Image 1 (cartoon, rainbow, N blue to C red):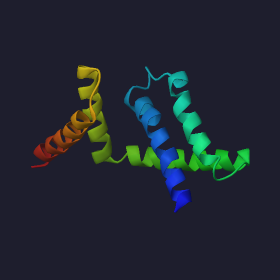
Image 2 (cartoon, helix red, strand yellow; image 1 turned 90 degrees about the vertical axis):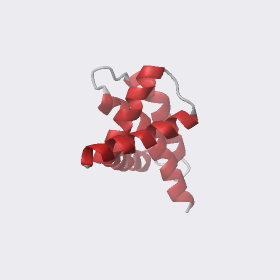
Image 3 (cartoon, rainbow, N blue to C red; image 1 turned 120 degrees about the horizontal axis):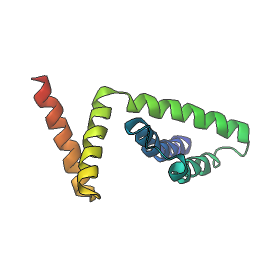
Length: 112
């Protein structure tokens, strides 16, 4: 249970920068994402002190995050949310929830 929670925390830490890179590859700045990768590594250090093990875990989680981001409905919501964020600059938690719900409505309108 603890292992899963730690891996989930690492997943969350990596989701932002990997989504940013996918959303805007030419504008992606690796140095701005370093703190997120460091957080993921710090999480994984709770599971092992072996740097090779941590590196492999980081690779596996990165593959899982990329798989998650490549799901059409997930990526559509992320793109929709990113556009709202670009328009407004910052969003409250409630505004994020509304934008995600709006993205679902937008997808549904295109399906039917």
